Picture 1 (cartoon, rainbow, N blue to C red):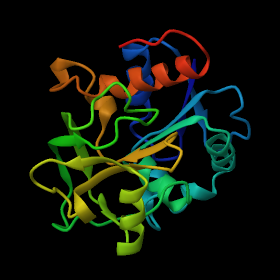
Picture 2: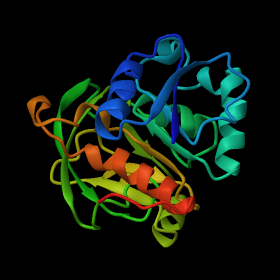
Picture 3: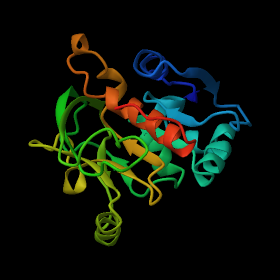
Picture 4: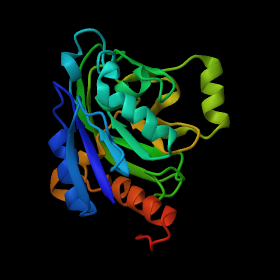
Amino acid sequence: MKFAVLVFPGSNCDIDCYKAVEDTVGQSVDYVFHTATDLSQYDAILVPGGFSYGDYLRCGAIAQFAPVMTEVRKAAEAGKFILGICNGFQILTESGLLPGALIRNNSLKFRCHQVDLVVENATTGFTNAYKKGDVIDIPIAHGEGSYFVDDETLATLKANNQIVFRYAGENPNGSVDGIAGVCNEAGNVVGMMPHPERAIKDILGSADGVKMFTSVLNAWRERNGAASIR
């Protein structure tokens, strides 16, 4: 399996994602810059956190026009696995690959600490190694992480089982319905504000993010008729 970690001007979690792939599943991984025009060789695409293009206009709003995003859209349509984390989630919503928008935290403060998440959908390409209802410990680090959708879209997300994670206990940013992550209808594109790539070893505070990476390897292996790992 081959992973791409996208790199935009201002990305700062790209190295974390790269190392997470190496340390959790040991698969091939490349940095791919925002100017790339071909992602055909990759099976999974990680859109990391950071401040793409400085977030000078709106988080993710400029990155959506980068050449590589045309290829990300093609990859999504082809059923390849795509994970957007924090700023990557913002980019995916701005690009129309996921519903909703990320707005300022209701506290108007940057929040950076561990949170508990409830796994609401354990059938996506990035969550199949969890069980529905699992509570996992994953850190957040964002100032514009409040997930917003209108009532009609929220009803659609619930009906289609597109809510992947909710915050357990405190809602740290005022997200609608406590939503911390969502997926597209097919389940191959997932976006989340918390950082699973920062939760892959106990020494980091939690290893609960490991299954995000083993999940996608399982999904790829099952798709290609190979044995999965649990």
